[in-house]
Length: 376
Image (tube, rainbow, N blue to C red; front, side):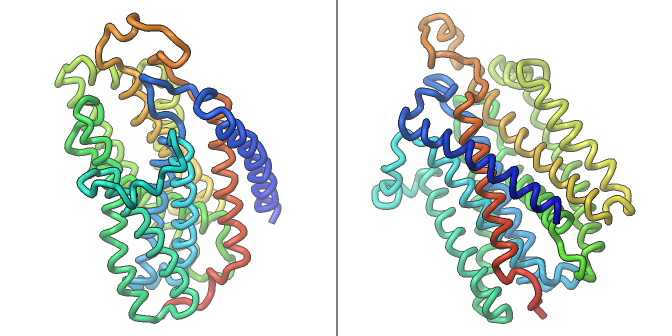
């Protein structure tokens, strides 16, 4: 209880800071942001990728209970759906605040080109969000309904589509060789499942019910999945980076070096690899610690931290490498720079979105009937 109260307090403070950041964003536009004409995407895009990954992954986990009726995950489906809904709202709020004209979002529905990956993603997220909302309602009111199983069956490939589409959106950018690799759309569904698995470790480990007879075994299975997916993630990193380095295309090599040895080295080696990957692998590979509520929950937090940083390390380096080297000296100005680190306003907005998401999840976890009434 003390932990939950502390998280409530920290999240409320983060939300207050975020309200200031959103006020600055709405009154000054993008003026106080550190991105500009060259680095056009920043922290909010990275957080959009992060939260969208958790959303898709949480839905995948919910199917273990609500679609496949895996006995050990009995009773986890509704809270996984709530986690997915809250994460999707956080993702869409992050990317909405990044738009130059937020009020024009309706145009993508009425005037969008369905041949565009961006338009496909907007429609995909809209359908995915509605599907999760209806599924959660049915899971609470009538968990044995055939309609719920049908929606979960439809939602599983849809979750793969919305997560893979993010990779496709980056991958089709042929001018950004760091993204323009065939593996990228394939990686994102795997990363989404890993993010959802880590988030469920946090939910069950730190906020789970002591009365649940399967809690220890749920944590152990999720821990195994987290370790396996972390190893897969390391393999994808090695494949991407080694191909880029051996390919010896200057723009691609410069982007990889920016991650490994440049301005983002500390985020990659310390936050993403050491804290976000290696430490959780070592801890969660031990059955006694993996079954321990606090150990498992906090390892889930570290894995999520690593994935948040990983999203930033996908977005930032590709944009901070000039497409034409002469651009670095041809023009000068406050928003004509290839150096990027999020501004105070960007951090404030992000803290507010994180605080809002955590508060929404905790309030729903307490007020909604997300536990009990398990699916037979």
